[in-house]
Image (cartoon, rainbow, N blue to C red):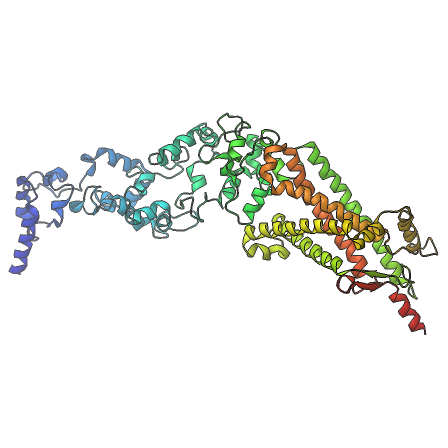
Length: 618
């Protein structure tokens, strides 16, 4: 027992060395538990209060002996500002429901005799220690405030650019009190809160001065200063406890996510109607190459911020805006060197979407295809269905449509050309529609094999093969005897005009005589010349789209828009035509089924079905 008292006396004496002489008297009683409570003075010599008399905090115990039991310490007697801030704050009221007197302060600052200055690394409220201190309440689900999704603010903060910087030893990185305040912490919905929507720019601007200045001058900042609640503040784009570097894939302002972030407001019909904003900006962007490539995983392609800016977003009417007509060439020139002429005219969003909404020419071309595609494909289906039904329902089988004994003889050169044509056509269609419809089940595989990069170069590689094949075919037609012979046979003739009508009359039972078509009839000729015409259109429009920098520098915007409209619509027409026309006459035609093998063997006897029938009749 005596040893214990000696050790206690030594400890008290050691701690008491940092006390003023007037405080030594207090230890005369408060060093013996049998006469008075013994304070824990361990570490007091390094505390923020080490030089104070006991009575500075215990004011009602200034007389000895005490006339009555001293009351709780009033920290506000020395710290009136923080104390009042704590009492008035939402945070403080919640704390004081659980703690009373000095315990409310000690909940954050630590035990009264060990309170350290806030710049002391061992202080619980030192910048690097704030997440742990605040997390003692906010890190426990159900104990205090949690994230809107039920998560822990502490865990979320630790994943942010600020939390990671703190963990790396950067004590200047934003900690809890920098954003929420210290004693005056309030709920975000409180107008006096540092993290209320109206004040968040000033709060973030304490560290991010240039960004805050640019934001205040922007269309978003000005709208928010006028009290428009829908205007985005810092946290609407960057997040709250999820703030990450724009270079991180998980950031809401990363290149891969910025479009979705902006779409949260600009894709809202309610906001567009309320403030008179264009309602098609997100839709037209997503229909442009930029939007389609972005949706297909290309993080290098232009996004909203690439053109409109980040913190300095201004309306297009502002001369300082990046999307002001006078500045578009510079803005787009960041990616498209030489872009100049096209961007000074027209509606850029609608034009690049390629839906025919920005110019009369493109709109008329789109209308033309919307009429011609269903008419053409509908006519093919009508024509071929009639032929199929007539052949299927006629017993005995009809004689061959072409002269008996005729053969389609395809040379090796023609079969090679056909192979390259079929392969490049398939790859062009597959990779082209994969851009427009990346989630279509049949096209998903290409996206998984490298995303937009693989799709783009597959399309361009197939296009190069297609163009080279076109040149090779032109040489074949003009400079070889076989080619010139084939060309003469495929030239349109007057006899081709009545053939389709005669066949349709027969198929519908309006004529008893089935017409005998020539070996190269309107069936082959229409397909061949449609192929040549469509190929020319696709090559011309594709060249404008591939060499976009040249086009942006020399052509008006309606030319580029028209090229996008025609390129897509012509592709739809070509693919449907191949399926409906070529597919029927070489596969599903009962006279050819299961397939006309000329593309492999070079030979297909057209009178075969009739000859077999005669053999069967024996």
